[in-house]
Image 1 (cartoon, helix red, strand yellow):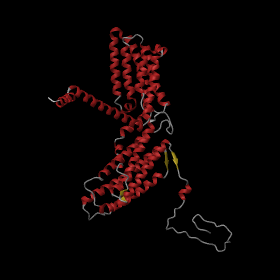
Image 2 (image 1 turned 135 degrees about the vertical axis):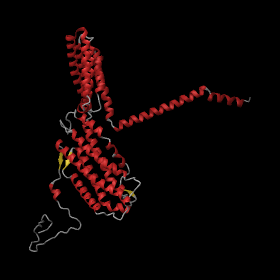
Image 3 (image 1 turned 90 degrees about the vertical axis):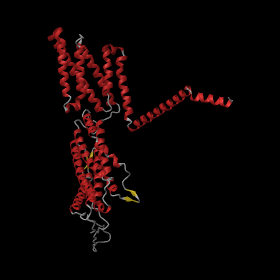
Image 4 (image 1 turned 135 degrees about the horizontal axis):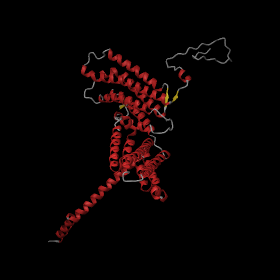
Length: 475
């Protein structure tokens, strides 16, 4: 065997042997885990950039847990509560939520449920002790546990209770069972219930105070922005749909800004559950900013419902952009002008309403004009359809255009209902009304074809000033 063959066999054994395979596997694992770490870091960075409030919320949770942990670290406090101090720590973890409304809802539910269930459990313990004796006490306790647990569990099925007090009902069952059952072996039931109520109250109040005092996140504001943002998405679609459907271009480019507006409205279709959850949590929040006590949050749900009804019509309109059966251009051009006018005016009206809702101000004429113009265009479109302008055309080819025209007429009615819902909300919530000065509204606008008659008095002296009337005449 030559030296070259010996070197080759040695290198091959090192590269293909168990040790070599182990090295390659370790390198592959290292590269794989490093890639996952980099991907997780990028995702964390994106989450923080999308909503910096998430980073602040994380620090607030850490601060609240640190404050409550002092009951365990500080000896005088620990002597007062003992191991029950751990209930305060657990309560902070469970109660602290992202928004003020969610934190208040959970905190108040937990405190009230603990108070009521603890009092009821102490009463059950005394009744069982007095009436049951050694034999009947466990039977009575088991009976009361069964009745209370079954009754409260059935109450959770009521929609009104489940929406706002479901967490409290669960804590009621938990606290009642813990106090009543553990009281069978404990002699100081009242002291145990007192300590548990005190620690849970401390654990509930701590996150509430931290959440309210440090960069509070108001879910009512998020609800308002969500409803307004949904209207904006529909407005973007309507403004671009007309140009996209009729393929109107300027300098070879489509007037609709890209294709993203075709997809943004889809999130409106599935926003019902989120809006209802946010409205239920917003009811727990105190007055802040332009939101007073007993703000009509349920009326935002009405606006959201009308917006989704409009989104369903828009979803149907979107199907005609990519349908296999397209009407010829000579057919579509007959309804082009009123359809584009409807799309433009309804889009502007929706954006005006969204801006007014965000700013909690409502102009007396900003959206009325656009809706009036869209209704006039809809009437013009109806008259075109009634005249039978496609009598000589193929029926199959006219169906898509007729369907689009009918849907646009229905969209106008939906936008009008949205405006009515927003105006009703504005009146009940006392939004600020911004009105234009009357002088600016009454000024006539002269077109290029307008003529102004001028009369000159030859008897007037040269030095006298000219007097101009309001209609433009000099006399």
